[in-house]
Image (cartoon, rainbow, N blue to C red):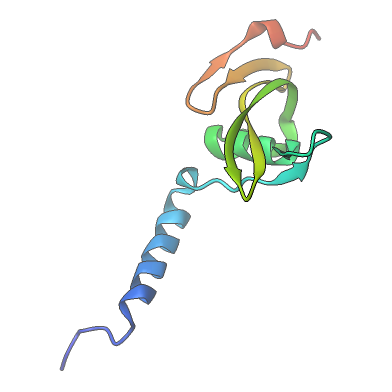
Length: 113
């Protein structure tokens, strides 16, 4: 009896990548873009919130974006694509700041109760 798989090698690669994604969702993030007034494509606010949630684990409905900045990330087919590079937001009235590499509490964005 043989234990060698009869599946093509690329199928095993797809399965491996899928399992990696399931076990570590923070490795993979989907970006959503929308047309901006200046003709370029900008990351949508929903995409920004999804990145905050997937990176830092907050509950989506609790994330309230307050301020953000964008930078040009890449150009594709002559179209410029911009993404959020830093965001200040609140969760349950507590302020936070992130550059998507690190996160800090930011009391300047706390909501007074």
